[in-house]
Length: 140
Ligand SMILES: [Zn+2]
Ligand SMILES: [Zn+2]
Image 1 (cartoon, rainbow, N blue to C red):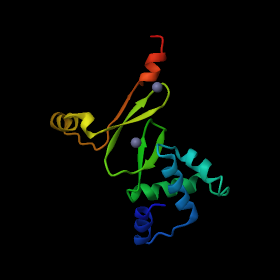
Image 2 (cartoon, rainbow, N blue to C red):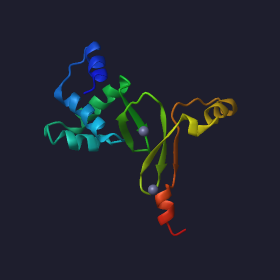
Image 3 (cartoon, rainbow, N blue to C red):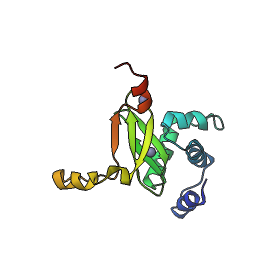
Image 4 (cartoon, protein in one colour):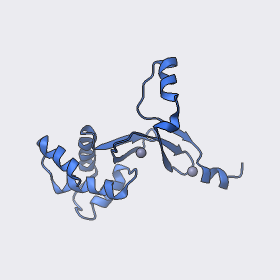
């Protein structure tokens, strides 16, 4: 567990159970988006008794502390990743489910013009479509 996360949890009076530490470590080692089921599966290699609701509770706690970011990549598709310093956005392929990161400069003035025209403010943009690999292997 990073010093940052350890300190934050301790300062806020949360007990650093091995399960909590492991959920964080699993996400960090993976380095990308994971579903709670994937996290649970890896945690279970060390703690077979940890169930999915414990994993969800831990993830919800880490999200509430801004240590983990939750992104909805579909109606039933909650994913989790370590929160980074710089905000990022997602390109989600509807065909293969791959997720690419883009960063603020890639959006140009989209956020500002969205806010001007619709009053809508967002810090995270998720774009759904077809990735390059799927388009190049596609027949249409
Ligand atoms: Zn794809
Ligand atoms: Zn992401």
